Length: 167
Ligand code: ZN
Image (cartoon, rainbow, N blue to C red):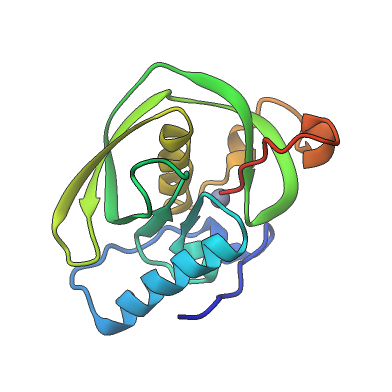
């Protein structure tokens, strides 16, 4: 496994639409492993393939709950409900946070690394992460949806807060 370089805000690859995976390959398996390692190394809760420069429909998520690491290939959001409004960050926009309203529940269908179909349901932070990562596959960043100024994270939360999730 290897740490990959995370693409930053003005990189135009972050604005492109990603292609579906039709077949799992050894190269894509390595990409998935590298995405997980890169996400953990950056202390993130989610990472999408375009963030490491690959325009394919793969996301990884780990919000530290009982789901553990989630790998979603070709994710499609089936259902959302409720809403939550709170701070959101992104590994591609380091050190920044803004207020974004997201569904409080999301149900997503996709495939795991063996191309078995999986359905994941999440509430709270997991729902937020699912929506955030699926947006990346369409070239959408959270700053497009921000309802507040995009601020330095320590200013947004107050200097001593540890409530910082980066996706
Ligand atoms: Zn992100």
